[in-house]
Image 1 (tube, rainbow, N blue to C red):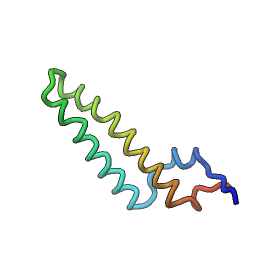
Image 2: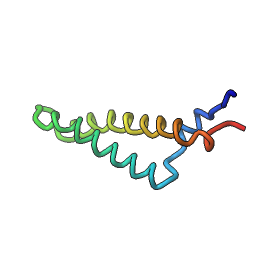
Image 3: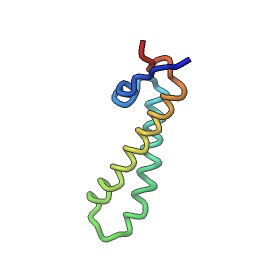
Image 4: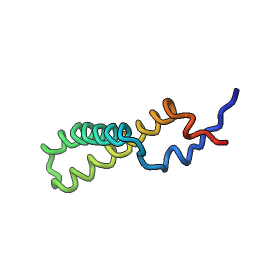
Length: 80
């Protein structure tokens, strides 16, 4: 049986459940701290370090949300 998944909807829909919101926030927080830690001791400005750490943290955490959606919520994101 082949299932068709609406990829655009998985990627672009905001987190709808409390579990997704909490997971996204925790992943953002953890990855931001991991990326920002080494940048604190560099010679770049704090604002530039925060932006440099925020971009990969956002992309990694959103990628995990999409991955978890594609595994656990296939029925909600399948095409009719």
